Figure 1 (tube, each protein chain N blue to C red):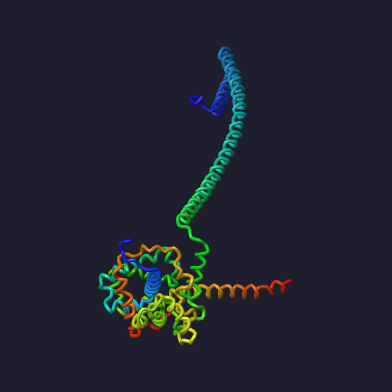
Figure 2 (figure 1 turned 135 degrees about the vertical axis):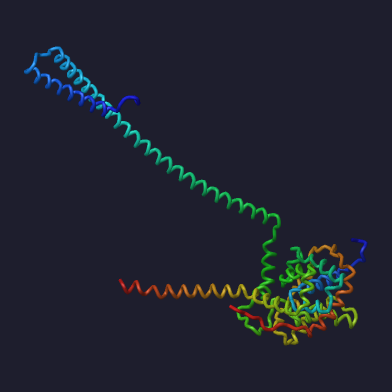
Length: 258
Length: 135
């Protein structure tokens, strides 16, 4: 069909040809009046006209059929377009779903990792609470709410506290000879009750330890490590240090720029 | 382990308490400065002792600490560079300042939170009467 002319052109050429033949015919008829009648040509022309007429009718019929087909084509094309749109929508939705699932899986994996990590080193919740209480109740990790500059409280043991601690008094005691452990236990309570002027002595010497801790539940003896020889040396050194600590320069003003 | 001299229970307890107190003293940068100035950090035996004290990082021991910041300083003390730097008084002061500022971090955060909450509350209270008036 592609080698043929389009139906419209065929129709138009047909009509042109009929027009030409009709003109010829009329010319012939006019000429007939003046010359001899040429009936053979005349009948040929008439036949030609009739033939062209049938051609024209056939082409018109063809054109009609083609029109119907064209409408079908248009309808199908719209169907195709509609399906295309649907498919594109589905594609979009699938992509979104994939993204959501990917995020969900990623988060779930992270959660699993966190769970595995937590399970690898389980901590007794009660111990955790005890520890949390210990470090926060004494303002060791968080400043007290009414702390101002010039307040002597600090996030670390100050030299006064150090001197009042077990380590500090160990030095004094060593000078007086061997003091038994229970005596040391009872002494600080006594001294605290006498009202020391230390501002942060609220928990007493045993602010660092509670009585219960001294039971040392199940701690292994195996910590006789490298510093084994040092054990005898260091307590003495500490005593020297603690005694001389009064000369250290403590920075009093902290620049609190907000 | 049994080849070492037998430490009595009491001696162990004393050592535990002594080392607990000593390791927590590391949380005080002024004390570290003090130790550095007197040359303790140059003594290899002392350096070994600091290395040995790292057992306090284990949970079984760490739960007895009141000043957990000391563990950070314990880590820092393992480095010779830090031990040399802390001889400098400025360094100790700087660390002290930063420590105190950090200590106040949660307090400040809480105060800010409370302030913003109070502001929001004030806003809602102020906005409430106006719709009633328009009706």
